[in-house]
Length: 146
View (tube, helix red, strand yellow):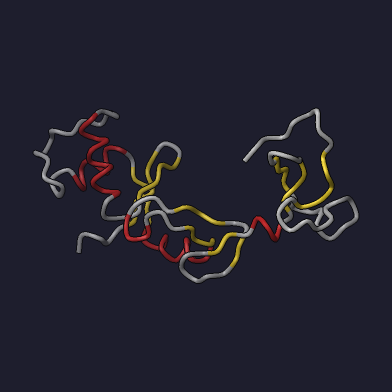
């Protein structure tokens, strides 16, 4: 997708469906800038919608799942919250304590640093469950090890 170019006029239409997005139209709210090879304009809210891979609803607010059985799926807020009922925030020390032996590391061999051993542990964890970096910690879906 191209970016806006200042030397071209911005059209007040959705470049996908070609509907009017000018001020006062029903499609002005929630439009976003869009640049294409030949023209600059907007995407209306309807053309920004993404299909949820679980419930098949079309939504504008979605999450891309990284890891676990839902890896690579786009989920609406409701479906994401459903898988998140057993998601907890863990810090690096918590992840090491709970999972290093589970994944075959010698107890105490993984240090609380972002080194190769910890990154390998995170990759192994992502292979079996949902894991996402959140602030100073990690959101990890629980219950997969049963």
